[in-house]
Image: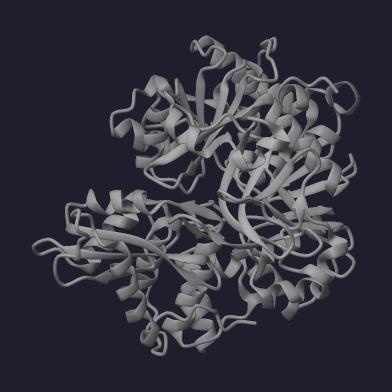
Length: 530
Length: 79
């Protein structure tokens, strides 16, 4: 196979399958040829606005045929896809656009209006549909049909930037090359056993490596993708039946809802061949029900971090014996568990998971220091691989007697909530910018549904109070980042000898305060519905 | 029943990136505004405020896609 980039991966289907339906939206569908046509319209527009190879184009569109066409158009002209979640706020869109130096922003009409009202030049915007009150903003729906020749590209060229929280500061852009994306598609296709007969349900955003990989694997094998923009268990089950879906990928909060629904009302899903989980641990009681609500369906438990695209999986044959394990390396990758300063962990030991191989990304956009800290030679592996760079995951795992891996925890302060990694620094920065606090400490608290929940401790300034700060957080943060609880610290927070906040003391006090309050009725963590 | 349209919309704003643009007829899930975590929170909120249990099979677009639909559904539960 000689697909040089995302567009090449897609267009390899055009000779033989041009009339096959590639994408299903709830009320629309498009063949490979039709998707190619829609991508060409957008690609022609990109060229007229001066987009050149290696330029960054930000995309924030609802899950749709149009979103895929926009991504393909950007790839076709050799530019870099920067796809971000539709749950991100205008402030975050502006941050990412500035950070990556995006030449053009492709968004839904409401976001385009909001950006222009806040000073973005309308000529940097392309909206999915026309805005009556802003006719100067170009709209995808109004673009004329066109034909565009694809740009030349090589395996090491930058294909996409995926924004993720690092251990400190603002979101960082992980740089994926064409080779990273193609290898990711090949590896996952191999271990899931995907073919052109597969039809995947896509619920997860294409701004996530896990969601993006669903799309690229179906391009590789010539399968189809069913877009499911509504993350509602009843709708998901209905669409799996209606569209004869063969594969479904989700994250733990969604599995909780889907499994509960199917446990209450068993539904036969004859087309479904396999399901996959990634983005965190599924609660054990839900995991145990999965083989019963999905009889005969292959269940893959997977693990990946954006900096290395995908890393491990547990084969379905092992599910009964090892439910909860993240298994072993995916094809083409090497996974090692490192005891720092000592060597490689053996059976029964634990250490940090590091990833080596063709899926290792190019690091963080414009952040050479953060890249050098995350992706670097590993002294404990020098005798095996020399100075080749590996990704340090920051995840501590245990190796069992068979060599399968089990997630233990993080080795840094990063909060893992509902599949997102959130840095306490970023939350604290948002809270500080309210101007309402003198001190703030953000931290994660174990939570059965979310993995961890985001909480903050604050010392208020002047007249500021709980609801004002919460309103600020709701306005500037994406939903998953908004603190589930604000602990009010009545005075200045304790400091260390060097004058820094004594974070562990503050966090510990809050955790002690939480323990008795769990006996009171405030927020039940588990819904009572079956 | 303590559930009101006002408290419901306030709760929804907490979990969306909508910047305050939610009214009684705003599509919540068919628009992509709310994700799976927000959905779990919303169901818990409706249960707490109304004192009723929401069955998994009742979480449908028809019952949950807008604040006014949720209010109608909750009133049906209480009846």
